[in-house]
Length: 281
Ligand code: SF4
Image 1: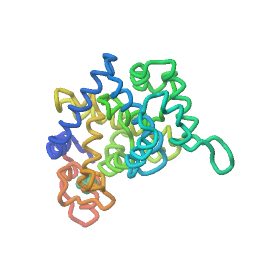
Image 2: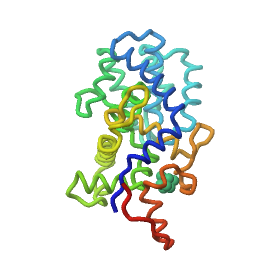
Image 3: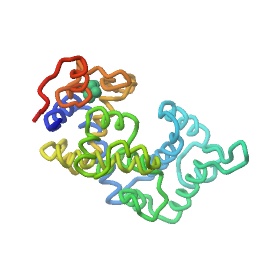
Image 4: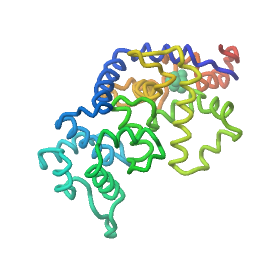
């Protein structure tokens, strides 16, 4: 079954265009300041708050992290590097029940130590390279932090993106075109390997199907992180956060603009004995 995803992507983008544009405009401003190393002290503090937020959210749902950060802020007053280091025990749990240093504490310490000696802008630019010899937040958190600040070359792979890649058939397309392995081998590797592979899948998907799509002068084939902004809106369940919950836990394929180019819907139709043409393109 061959699917040309080009039209589906265009329809999907159109559906979420205004909100995506404003998100990009905000990101591009951040990127300009980071690349030119012209951050104000408030902006630096904001970045430190975001870094701590990325660490706190790891291994849990993002819901509630902003409230947690607000409470920390009430207590510590500002997010300067010196102040975070001084109050680190109030920000991140140092030891677990067995008295071992927690992973989050070790991660925060390594990053703070690095940023004491190195420029934060340089560190952020370093996150673009997955193998750069700097302390990383983690494959998903690096990409998420970068995306929030206008660096769309990387893609954070969360459960919404995974769901979209599996259901639409993008993952099957990727394995067929870029791997000699079968698609189920995605479950064989470690978490980090899987995240990197899924990120590669979305990067290649955008190169193949999004070369004629740009938003705010950014071409999606070079900025796959933009598609992730759209996927989150489309697949996220939390409508209070602005998600449409179309491709959520219970997919609403009957009202989905991507339907005509989605493997899931195509297979559902076949199972219901309602075959459409098997080739789209
Ligand atoms: S057609 Fe259904 S499965 Fe496919 S993207 Fe839309 S909601 Fe998700």
